[in-house]
Amino acid sequence: MSPFRHLTKLLPLVVVCAVATIVAMAARSPLPPAARLPEVGVEVSDLKPAVARVDAELAARWKAANIAPAGEAPELQILRRLSLALQGTIPSLEEIRQFESDDRPDRLEHWTRRILADKRFADYFAERLARGLVGKEDGQFVIYRRGRFIDWLSEQLRENTPHDEMVRRMISESGLWTGNPAVNFVTAAINEGDVDENKLAGKTVRAFLGQRIDCAQCHDHPFEHWKQQDFEGLAAFYGQVQQSIVGVEDRPVRDGKAVEYEIEDRKTLETRVVPCGVPFHPEWLPEEGSRRARLAQWITNPANRRFERAIANRVWGLLFGRPYDEPVDDLADPDDEKQDLLDVLGKDFREHNCDLRRLIQVVAGSVAFRRASEFELPADSSRSFGEELAALKAAEGSWAVFPLIRLRPEQVIGSIFQSSSMQTADQNSHWVFRVLRLAQGGQFVREYGDLGENELQDRGGTIPQRLLMMNGELASGPSGGVNPFATLIASTWRIAAMASTDESCVETVYLVCLTRRPTGEELSHFAEQLKGKQKSERQKIVEDLVWTLFNSTEFSWNH
View (cartoon, rainbow, N blue to C red):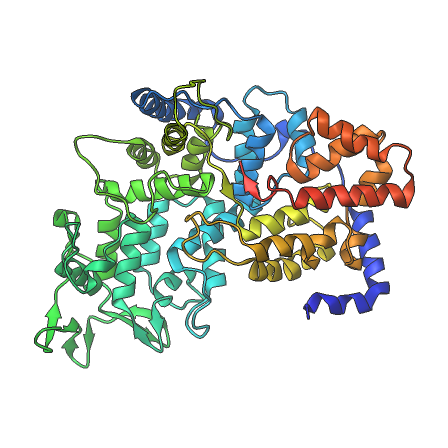
């Protein structure tokens, strides 16, 4: 039984809380005009040269492939993409109204800066980044605090700490996992007091260089240049890591003897000492400092193009739902002869102090991010179906059309909850609403199915997911349904009661649920159903419309 069902027994208290929520929302002072809302990041005018370089790279790719890109998406659709990617939810009706009242020609750029100033961005993006750094499992609570690690990442994002500095801290710092949360990158690989140097070596290369060296743990890589000794040399940098009462520390000497990284030779079964080593450019490796500090400096060396390309590819993936180069952690070696879009993004990233906000702004401002998801091939009766399919795939592969990506579970439930409130559901919402979202949101994600660490791998929907959306308490509650608590704070009765006309009512529902206005056909169809209906009968029709839009394919996809 859902733990939330027990709350229905406290219906009188729930009614009071719900009324308080509505009163609080109604009394909430109006937000200032969009132009005066807090913004952070690079000034819009300063960003244009970088965006132009990215657009030129994309245009050259399309020209070489003889591809005409899709048209530009409507601005509300782009706003929805931004909100889903950076905050994990769709825009509220309140935000939509503010956006549409902003008459600046570059309002999308300004709204990107506004989203970056919102605490919801830092919290959500920290969780997304953490998936690639420490996975999604909670691990051993005694020595690992995933929540503290995410809070630390969120704080770094709010302070706009340079990315290379964050990485160096994760790899090299010591201390308690509670007092110095950065060390949780290391403690995530400690099990029963034993440090898994192999896991740390593989994770370090995948997370920060975007390449997979794990295969070389047992043998030379069959296709790449990685050798087994390369993997062993990287693992040796973590060979002095110890867990003690003071937390994570490096012990070069123990019991009067130097601590070395030793492994058992698979052939001779004899123990041998493995020296620290790097697979390329050993001149980047400092001679001074702890082993982990030296490794961190090598990883983030300004000449290491793998580092900047890896984060550029990951940020591109987090905004589009699919990385520029797949898989996100298996990039090819940089090509000295020919540079691509990741190099363009990476170079700008390096030249501006490894600024993650700037990188996000550049990607979000690119011509690719603003393409429509609809793509029509030029009419050609001689072209076969297979040729048309190949042409469509070529357009998708060259980013000439925005990819259709299924929403992540937390984006689905976040959008459902946002749709249940016409005002922005954030840290300033009434505590009752926030508790409800926390309690039910986690349950929905578990039932819907968490994507896990490999979240940027596109996966199809399932029948259980569709049934959960259609029949589950969590989906039906905000739209009306059988959940008394959710029904009381739902937005449907307010839309039904307060809309000035039938057409306005239908339009508001579409904006709240899909961040767009209905087509002419949709508007006339549903307005006709509302014609002459009053009170409960009218509310029921609105609830049915909301339920229908929740369960539409459009709601569950980013496009």
